[in-house]
Length: 415
Image 1 (cartoon, helix red, strand yellow):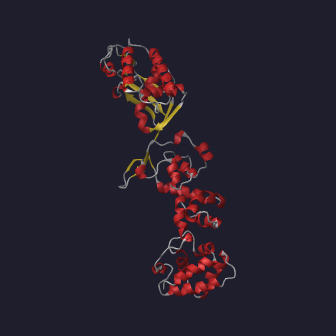
Image 2 (spheres, one colour; image 1 turned 30 degrees about the vertical axis):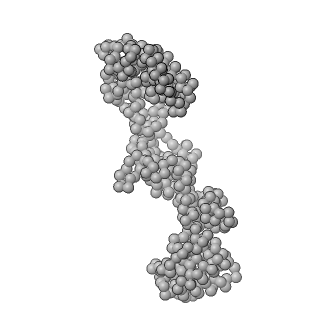
Image 3 (cartoon, rainbow, N blue to C red; image 1 turned 180 degrees about the vertical axis):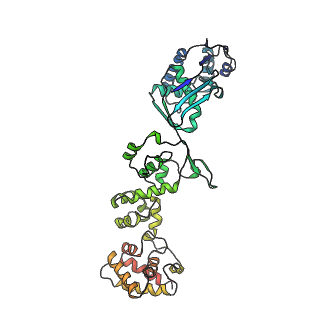
């Protein structure tokens, strides 16, 4: 709802050569007049109808072909003969209500007189926007809070036409964190900003929707994970904040990880398959076992190729990787442990995760060693890297007996 404490004035330039700006600087009615003798809103409604009809014939305003210089000159000359239209404001103020920011009053002296029709005969954006929204029956306008300042201009036009003013919902801005710790309006320098760009970065659509819904909106309870149906039921305009929110990629990754953990092995395999193929091509792999070790560790699907690359090919590594303080391994005991583990594993009758587990755990117990002292050298020899998505048992089970034995022998050769 909008109210203005003063009457509006419609001005028409009566000069055949003067530009539209002259209509603003040299009005045809006296500022002291309470009722303007210029054309009434109903006369401008005809202009509005012609503008809308012209826009329909020409297609989208954004895609409209720019007229030639000659055509522009002819149109401008014709339009000047028809008289240019401008919209002037008198003293007073304009008040409107926004669903988020409440009642806002703006002094008319802070608003510039509006140009409605340009010299080339085309309407200005603000004028065409009001007509377009009205003719399409728009009831709610949802946009960023940076457009709050232009709302009075729109509403004054709605009032002048006698049209119903839509409900305005101005949303808080989404900010990004700069390298120096400051925040600024979110842009590509902060990271991916488009929905499909985020998907390309390994985020699930449902996680993106969930996280974005909570930017600038607070549910009535502390619930964070929402299905789309739950969001539809819980969302309420009253929960929208006036303050800007900061797009936190770490928080988005947490949401994504929670959604991944909740997936079944089949669901995870389906979304992970494009990333599996980056590593293994069309080679058949134990994807259900990959799902078991990845679902609790992956926060972005794009992490999968780097996590699994050692399964495709053992990377080059130095023997210093066998040293680990926490596992109490060093260059003296690591080769001894690795040799015994290799011999025991080779003798296993069955190659299963349970059999591998029992073999290595029993070895540690029989030698009075910590489990980690046995597992660390075996995992380093099998993977060639310190950070892996699974432990020694899972890795050996996936590699299979033959490939495991080959890699453990390579590890022994480094000493």
